[in-house]
Image (cartoon, rainbow, N blue to C red; front, side, top):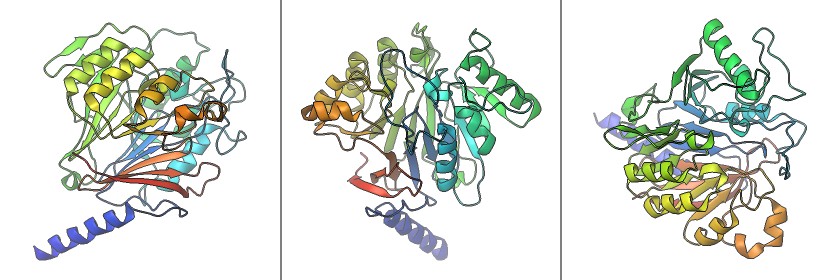
Length: 386
């Protein structure tokens, strides 16, 4: 018994030590007992990679705008360069940080059917040899770093779409790999914390849970599933709360419909340590509702357009003094032209990593995104979980 206690203490101390790595070194590998939440920056879509305390892995979205030209604005510079398709950058990043001995992901969650979350399939894409789908975003990543379980908001009832659309490409990917491979596809579950459970050593993290709160406009209100009447794609995003002991992290794709955000916030009903900003930090009304309830210490925003509403300058101005705001790729033209708005932001670009120790203490690391050495540019924290 004493040897087990001693072993646990050594592991705990090792995790604490690695959670306080210095600037200039490559971010140390994940260790058992630690929770890692990575926001991977390619400048071309949204992608989060999460390692549970027992080594179970979860990918949330894999946006890929390679070849896409926005109609009324520009994209930020690609990272590490514009020569490599974003899904390959995701693959290299994930392979670097996967727990030792792993070659695949356990879960993948697609929050909704938009190209900055699963991949644009325009010209210049390689087609799968026999699946009749283009390798882009989530579909391209699967070819190099496969995942066992794919979860989306509506499987098997997908929206009607043009057969040449990126959504149709995703549906062909799902059909082929579920019928001809080992991919299991599921609809996102509301009111449950068992769908994305630890798979390897759950005894290490009995206080770790991912709870499903919203999808397709439906919200778990604490007792029942209610329909908030969201009928456009962003508002129908999947939303979940990840908890590890005292630490809580909220993620909701692009869920920016006011009444849906309000229903979810009411159901959660407490302060959180960290959150991913919905819809790249846009929609002031919805953000005000969430902030009043969640009061997050840390806010992570995935951004990749030259737009002053995405992320929203008013939100940054109003909240960056009381919330530590981190951005994967702020448009530098806007930062340089309006420095007063952005002066309290903790970073303007890079891969972002929230690393949580078993006692709830956590740091935020900003990693260099100009190469694939993943060196630490800045360290923020420690933060305490309440």
